[in-house]
Length: 162
Image 1: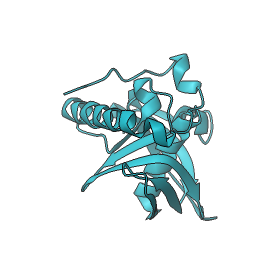
Image 2: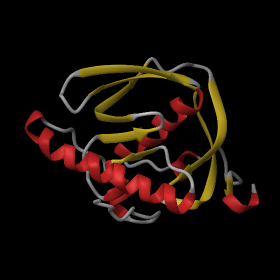
Image 3: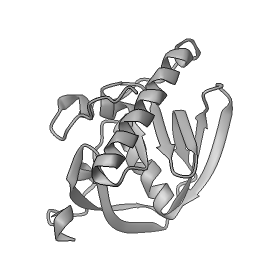
């Protein structure tokens, strides 16, 4: 098991833009994906939540996302397209600030294009909470945290208050 430290809010590395993965780096990314899986599962044991994680959250500045709800999915060099005009507002949480919730606005649906761990081009259509989840994780690749997407200055709450 390769549980990594999750960088916490305020760590300057979280605000950096991640680099694309090249084909030559694919084998290295398989270990990164395993680390993401192990780290997320450890977080789940501690906090009871955690459905997806981005490589920058463990200090890896590569465009890699990992989601595990019904089955594990690795997203290499993801791209969000066909974002709906219809928006939704909801409480967002993050492993980088596990006790804080942020009220954000996100697209209700979208399509994510990405490469898998075999370097094959894939596409997935998402809506509702899964669309929100992938937008949240995708933001990490661009150095954007949910606190930067807050609807207004009163859009914060401790998890225990909700």
